[in-house]
Image 1: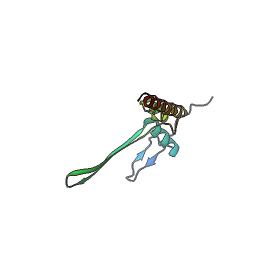
Image 2: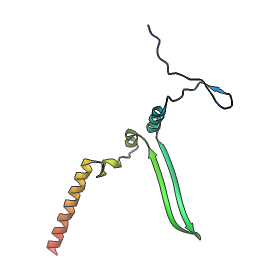
Image 3: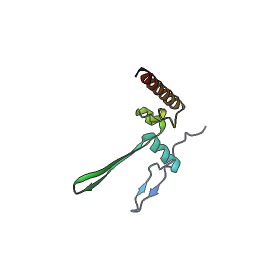
Image 4: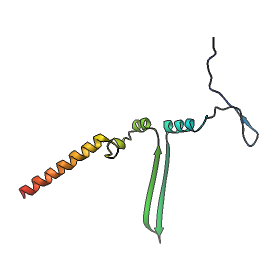
Length: 110
């Protein structure tokens, strides 16, 4: 009969000599899996002013998550992007054809 496997705990000593037995990630793959599962948000603003006049504002928002987590959050822009989705490309083509047809009909009436 075998004993159940328990996740390994490693003893680690920090630079002050304290020992910790907390579970530690095995490597980059584990860290990446945790980041994608939980998500990470990086936000920042860049403003350029000259004599108290705002010339430029750049807002930077970076969200790093897995596709599943993003969809849970209601983020699914890639499903509608013509460069990333075949369905979106078909929709964009249909939209373009309809606009062309409307322009033809309006020009015939005028």
